[in-house]
View (tube, rainbow, N blue to C red):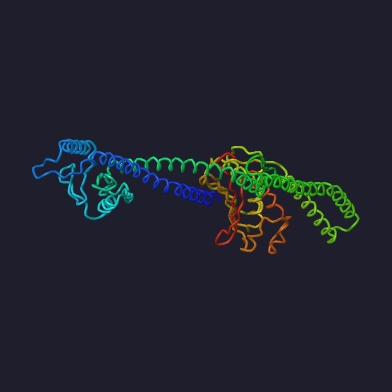
Length: 471
């Protein structure tokens, strides 16, 4: 969920920042150009004030009509030359017929087309030239022409024309854009951090709920959720989950208690009944078939009650996990069962490493292996092998018990381990159908698992998997 929510939030925040940053960059460029244009208009107005009294054209010898106009013309030329030398901005004052009154550099022409020509025409009409088109940082050929009329006695007698390079202005705009970009990047980093924090705050209770649900599904019924973090809706959901888990645990506990109590309470009447059957058998002839049948069913019922009590205890008892030598424990159980295997003519052997450690409850693991080995010996014909092996694989240890019995079909493999389930082909074999259910309950409490698979060409392979890392 986080991988889907985070990109959505980041894209939305990036869109917001771009929607703010792009107009801000455009405004920054416009403001900088407007500042340059206003500055050039002020400069043009200053030159116009110097030129408004130099209206007479110079004579053929270069002198004007009066020494005063010669002095003003010289002052205007000096100012234009100094302005060009200091700022590199071309500037000139031109009569209405485009002939120069004074210009720097000398020979500066009047533009005949483009924005410069339009600005000159507007100045001749007595208006300040319009703003030129926007110059962007990558437009290294753009220039800013500005024209201002020289007015004397209400008439436009000349035009002041400036033609400015844009390198410095474009540099200022680019520097402003870099600052905006840096601010956008910083804001994006803050937004991403806030998105991570927000999604973590929202999804942390969901992850805790998921982990607690998994724990309960795998048998750890005491798993609960702390309803102290996240949005109010998720805190309320956590409290509801805890209430549900409490109710489920109470129901299961009542079921376990009922099974244990019923098994325990039925043992005494059953024992008395079996004793009376034995006393009754003394009054009947030896070999009575009915008495033998009743005795067999009574013993089977006693075994079922014992297994029910063991199952209730297995589901209720917490595992005592320890770092255990699984290989040594499996070899020990093989040695314990070998006399019975020899008596039945079954070849029980141990294969694999002699020292492999894992985290397990030694008593529960021993009981589980006893049940699996006992089951394998029951169904393996005389002269056939039963092999117990231990092998590590990554973070797990696998204990396999493989026999050469009749095995199970695919449909039977799905049901094996269910309570009271027995294959219809094996009804004549003694048992209650609870042994593998008890084994699964013992292993699940310690974080281990048990699986069943065919053992070609025929037989059953049971694999008990134990974790190698501490819980």
